[in-house]
Length: 333
Image (cartoon, rainbow, N blue to C red; front, side):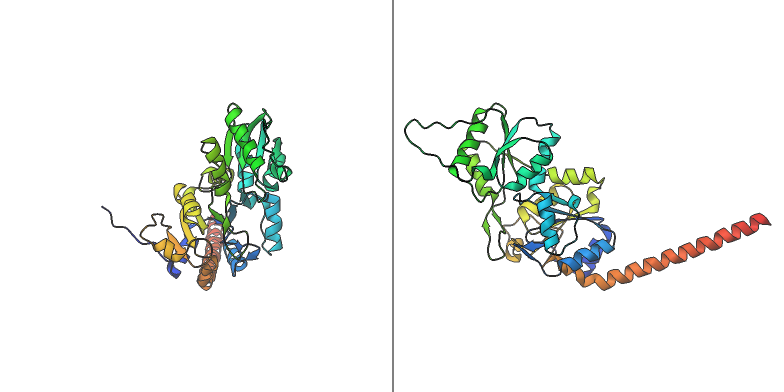
């Protein structure tokens, strides 16, 4: 039996090697970039360092409450310069997945406006969502709930206003509409809605529908490979060039390892060092560090390296100019 290796805490040589070999970084957001509505210390400077080296950056989140446009506003509000196409939310993933299979029916949404906005952008008809937040079921004798037979998919995302009406409507669609799909944006157990504590995640909402339908969902968020495939194919990236940075072992690190990526865990979110190093944990990242800004410890070495490479390029240009001059000179002679 091969010996079990402990996860490796990244030293400065590891960090420099990681930065040098990786062309693209994919970051989870909650617990890596921010907690609740507060950016984590040192993140802006770290992203600036990586961009200065020409690295491609993408931001993936299992939180489906916002659309890509909504997340762009959050990034901007936190003082982070990010482009909309660099953001991959699970709300976008749900709509992109349906588009990829040429879906033409209606979607019933358990979730918030982020899912609905992304469906609108893809031209996919939908119902439910926040519009059903106040609906109640009166269980009087003979009570019968109607549902739309044109619903061909139920998408379950995080929903702060989930209720029995929504659970029953989704259950009827999945159980009674032929071929109706059950799609989950993610199955996260907990989430960071505020920076004060962890809150029950979308796994609790998905679990309710699993329980009532006896069906397992198609998951489009992490650790499913759909978002990674979409990023890699759209931007023509090789897996060995990509590093996944996250704070969760069972979603972020599994997402990276399953996709053949280099993986780095930060301890600024859900996973503690105690959990990571526990003999019970079988999911090991390639590296781990306290938080993303720990990469700044090699900033001076990176700067020196870039300066040296710049000097080599300048000398190469000068050498090329001399060789060209000699070639022209001898050609004239």
